[in-house]
Amino acid sequence: MSEDTPSMTPQDCLVAVMIAVSVSDEAIRTAELVTIERIVNHLPVFADYDQDRIRGVSATVFDLFEAEDGLDAFFMLIRDGLPARLYETAYALACDVAASDGKLQEAELAFLQEMRYELNIDRLHGAAIERGARARHLTL
View 1 (spheres, rainbow, N blue to C red):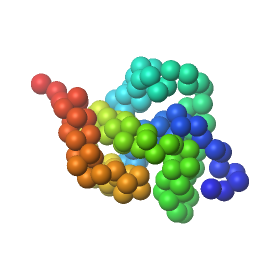
View 2: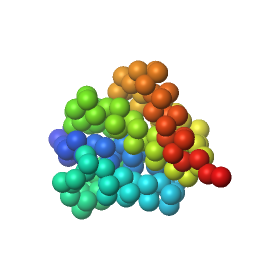
View 3: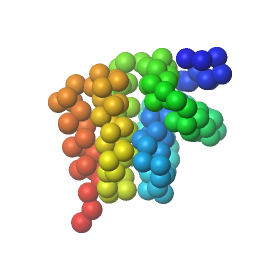
View 4: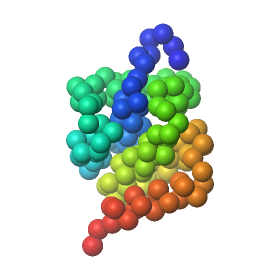
């Protein structure tokens, strides 16, 4: 991690993952932003989180995604700031954001695949998490 990249709390890392999957297809959709806001407002892991940090976390994600080797730096930042026991939580949140607009873009799928690899998410656990996200975001 470079000296100019800020360190992140575990909650920052979870927010960063949600933002990253949202911007991975180069289009941040309203449904995705609403989902991120809902998650931060309601999940216990964010109970003491200062939501004013979201803007800075977003800027960090945007900067990393514009940099050469930014995705590698992004995942290094996530692994450095997020306890391994929360890797599946991060993946679940990313899946919820990706599924929230009702369609998964190719870039989002590629990002999720890279995330499974980088965070060493077991294939069967990943499939179960993905299926749960899909089930939560189905429409009539």
